[in-house]
Length: 215
Image (cartoon, rainbow, N blue to C red):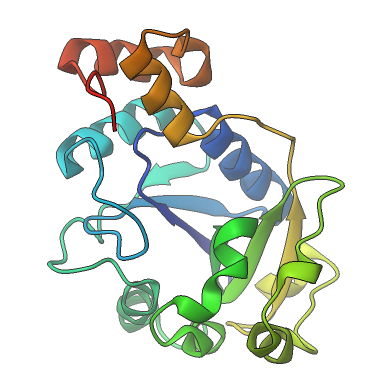
């Protein structure tokens, strides 16, 4: 079965760094990447844009992009957007044999033990960690996470297609300096932020008057 990969986040706003990770995952994993905007992110402050606005920005960003699709399942579910609940929902529709992967950034991976029922994630999906070249997070990993990932390392993306869940793959992606907080800060301060996001997203931010207030 072909691997399905899910990439969650607040995407407030989606920027070129997000897209670089998604494209690298698509090309290296040979999988369709489902970008899932969180409705109520439990691990960060409330978004600056509404759920509907963040959804529209993502749709604009991936328009015409082969293998990148917007998945609104977390927006359609009430309450906090917990990854374990999302993967349980996917398992119900895809069945126990479908290979699934959850794509996370290195910073999110380090904080994984703070997520709800985090050890169950490996029962439900593979984990793909987007690491920047030359930057290792191993020294930052909590002991509980080190114990959990022992013996799970995948050496090739093909391994993720051969079993439903349980492996960990390190994904090297191009170094991208953009961050959503940087975009918001530059918009609020009148700085040059437009090159950090796709043109259609930049036009939407201007049209909607987003992020003009500090914070």
